Image 1 (cartoon, rainbow, N blue to C red):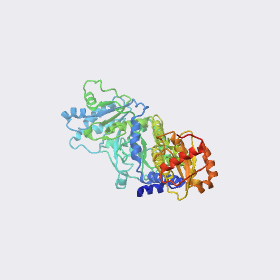
Image 2: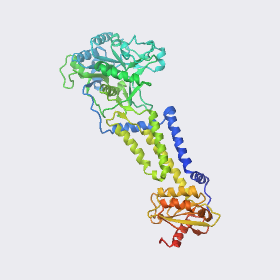
Image 3: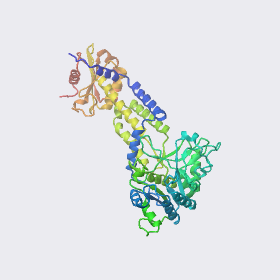
Image 4: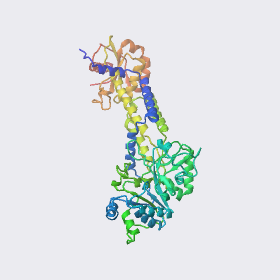
Length: 545
């Protein structure tokens, strides 16, 4: 008595009975549409790429050496604790900053970069504001940061290039009217407003991790404002600045966000405690921990968690913003730009890869793609990883790797259903004929798929029997010797009609085959397998005992 198959198994049988080409190219079309919509509309597949990119960054073999000119005067927790006794909690009176600025300026630095926002006047200590304003006016190397507010607020702002002329890129990119306003938090002190300026925003990705830095931002009138690192480049390397601006003007599409070429885990640049610098500047004894700042690019910022300039990066879940600024500045000064493949090119490559896999499966067999299921995605991710080690472009193949993995997994699952269907034992209403086949090796996935292709093409009323067939594949046959024997089973009239077509195909995949042998109708796979063995006995050309 034949056991009734559950509805879900019958549904899978219908899927397995579908022709190969429509299924294969249907999957190609589905994934192609999905990739195009994801890349240009929904943009939902960045999570996997971001996490694996972060792992690649941490595991790099080659990392560029940090610029030895860059040092950080660090408002760390130790400085907060030491200076609280005399100046109270942060923010301290700004004459403390003026003392440090005059001390550093007196040693002839290349630049003094302030990763501190001076957006409000000090109502408690106005004398400190006056002292710092005068120190800034005397400074020849200072660069100050402003905070760029969301673009949607630009129309509500009254700040133009006439108010903060040193924030705008010079010469302008493609100015149309020159009347653009910018929403930002401007400096409160007049000497800072007249000094070198740049925005210093951290634009994190959707998962909250900072991976890119924005060096330029275009405005509606065709002009652009510069970042804090670009302000430093403008002062230290005018020709490099002009070349960067000119290049940006030619290829400007949206904001100029670039991947940050991180140096290494841990503080890549020397950190000097602000309290130590202040003590020496205030007449104290020279300290071994405080270097000479001549020719240095000095960044004044904070790593103290209590001051909240902390964000996640590929290196750390809590990295100080001043270290990220130092890395972005280092990249710009030394032209270590890490370009990315355009998203449309990533999509094209992913779709082309699926098409190539589909063509290979049609010309060879789907079973021949088995090694590619893991090897191909790993190879693509390996290429991406290698591009992070000293290459000027990150070749992001995450999309292609993920798509190839999904495409091959679905294709192999459907191929398993297809094998189960064509190697099943439907009830035949007429006496059966068995066409016995043998190979020197076991019937592996590739030859079996080609045999099924031939039966599907020339004898769709027949089925395939492999003596040691396991549902789900033939990767590990239980009895390899027994798995050498197979047969095409079906009505005698059908096998007789398509004999010549099958013989031509079988000549490529079976080392031996005999004349069809008549067999009574069978209802189970085991009975058919026994019939196959009996057929080989009858042929007297092999011993299957």
